[in-house]
Each structure stands twice: as C-alpha cells, then as structure tokens.
Length: 305
Image 1 (cartoon, rainbow, N blue to C red):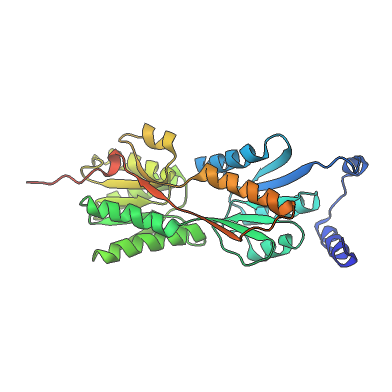
Image 2: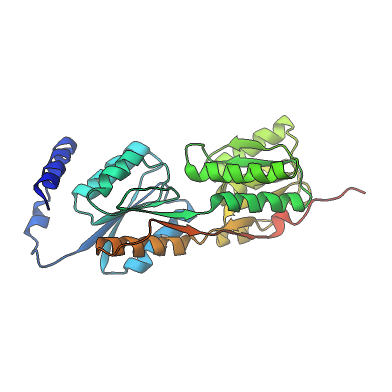
C-alpha cells in the first residue's frame, strides 16, 4: 500500500472514530479470511432474501459474508458501508440503487464494489442491472392487450433508479396505445399498496388495471380490491413485479408478475466481486432480461353484453 493511500485511510478512520480490532491484529498474517460485505435495504422483502441466497451460494463456507440491513435509511447505510471498509472487508455488494454516488466513488478507491440497479463509470465498480424499463413495458402492454384500458401504476418512490425505469416503461406502453398514464408513488410493502388502493377505490377513481412496483404492493392492492367487492380479474386486472413464486402462487387469484432472476443476479454479483478482489478484470455492467409470467390475476376483463 502506498504512503498516500495509507494516510488517506488513517484520515478517514480518525473522522469515523475507528477503533482497531486488536484481536484481528494478533491473527497470523499467514491466515487470510476473505470477507465481503452485503448491504441490503430490507431483509423482509423476498427479493433481497433471494439475492442474499445467491451471494451465499457462491461464497459457500470459504468466504465470510457480513450481511447488514439498512432499513432503507441512507444515513445508516452510509455508516454501515464505511464500517465494513475500515473493519477490513475485501469488497462490498450494495443492493440499493439509492446509495450515495460519492460514497461509492470513495469506497471504490480502496476495495471493489458491486452495486445493483445503478450505472457507474468508476474503475473499481461493477453494476448488476435488470432491464426494469422493458419489464414494466411488458406488464403494461399485457394488461392493455387483455382489455384493460384504465391502467394505473402503483409505483415506488421517485428517488430510486429502479422505480423511475419502471415508471417510464409503464408510461411508454400507455402512450403507445393512446392511453393516459396515472402514476401513484406508494413505496415497496404490502400495507402501502393496500392503503393506496383503498384510497383510490373510495374516491371513485376510474381504473380497471393495475401495474404494481413489486409483488408485495400488488398483494396489498388485491386485498383492498376484494374488500370493495370488486373481482380480479373480471373487474380489475393486476400485475406485480419480481415474481416471487411462493407469494404469486398462494395469492387468490394467482398473481401475474414480471420475473427477474434474482438469485442468479446475486450469484453473478458474488462471482464478479471475488474476481475483482483477486485482480481479474471484468466488464463494468451485467444486464439481465425480465420476462412476464401470466397467471389468473390478469387473464382478461369481463365483457358486459
């Protein structure tokens, strides 16, 4: 390590109030325990559970994976990432596209970084990206083709890159068919989907189709629709995103959803990070393609004769 880099690390360590791990210092330098950090925004979301499993599959028992939940708190996420760096992580996987760009740039000067759903041009950073725009376009186009014309989008918050891309894909499909898009940012969990759908139905909002940010939001929306005596798919068609098979199949009716190969994406993230740690050059971006899985919830609108 150069003197310049050593001084920079010590400077940031002082700012963080870092206390060296004396036990770690006493471990023989001949024993190298490879450690990577995995930072996710919400461990209760099935998407991140599958992502974590993909990472663990590749790392096995030879690599120590420190997994931390940021609770969708950016300040907490930043503190976690900095602590992982100064506690000796050899690389970090960040499963949140809201991550601070300057933080990624700073950390990547010292260790390799893999980020989900966000593009970077930094030398030591690789992006793992799903084509969210196309996935949202597929879902919306499918609803329109099944006879649903007043399709709304229960979206994520606009500061997330993935949310913006799904919103754009939805809007494109609507406008291509001469329809007016209506976007309602709700978030990412079942309760938020439920509350927004209740609010819309109670207000008399004209809708017969719903494309949701993810499967959890869709399940919440379905619960509200049933409570208002509306039928799925006869009155309202609905499509989620992520295709968590256990959730989608157990839903009543079963939920159509856009599939993303989450576990495979997690595996790729781990493989790429380990290659970077070992000095193997890699491409800076891996793009995965979504596909629509059609189930009962979007099987067609009832036609009144």
